Length: 206
Image (cartoon, rainbow, N blue to C red; front, side, top):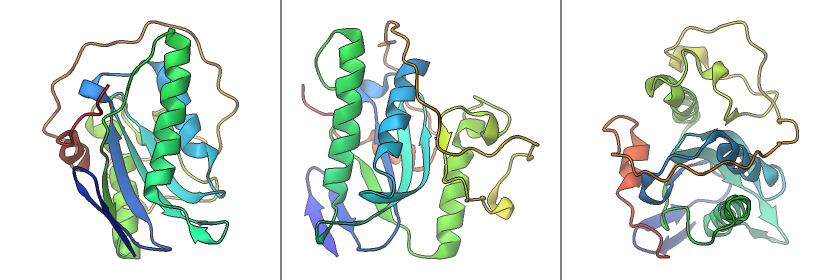
């Protein structure tokens, strides 16, 4: 087990799923093309440096459940994983906009998922996030969700009615359209569980 601390305490347990949330700087909403980039960065190292169970990119935050893997004789740390996802996505989004500077809060919120039942419940919670935020009627309608193709969520934990839609797998190559980034800060909602806990994390310094 690893323990580290930045502004918030973090704990990592080997060969165990971790529920991770990180937020945009000032909780700014990302447009569609920027969320495409972020989702692609989350998926990129699946089965290389971590095993990704689920990823959901919301307008102003990201939920992941993943298990770090062994890379060159050591367990990849959450610090390395998040640095790669956040750093690469920030670089790509800033390059499209022709600007520089942080786009993510410096800290993230993470917790160890301790049982299979808890894992199924956490996956269902993440999948339902776009429904709770009234972005879609059913989670399968939301474009920025990814699960391994073979994975089926436990329906007893889902609240929205299932529809006959094709299961999501690895997305096709993403086409990024250059558009202005919405930069108006939003007031964090009281709903959303861990996303609201993560919003209390200190922001990344420019």
